[in-house]
Image (cartoon, rainbow, N blue to C red; front, top):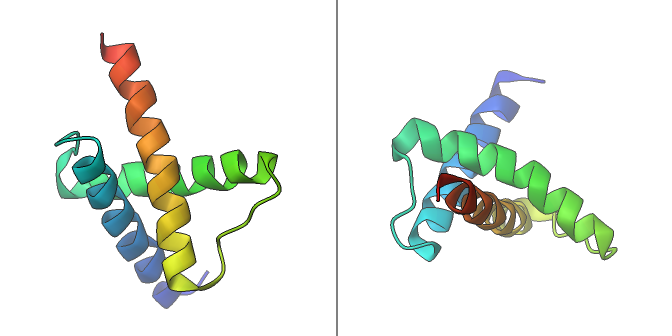
Length: 83
């Protein structure tokens, strides 16, 4: 993976984690935490949407939406475990 690809992946992860934190009402973890949640959320979102035969990972906006959906799922599960 090139350095440009890594930077794009980190940027999409940061945006997805930040959006998921907003959707889940301030459940964000700061910049580094949001990047990690967003990147992990991209995997979760790809897996979850793949179960339904859907792929949104076409273009930057699709990747952000897919990663955000996965990050919301991830934050929801983390919230359940924290209780």
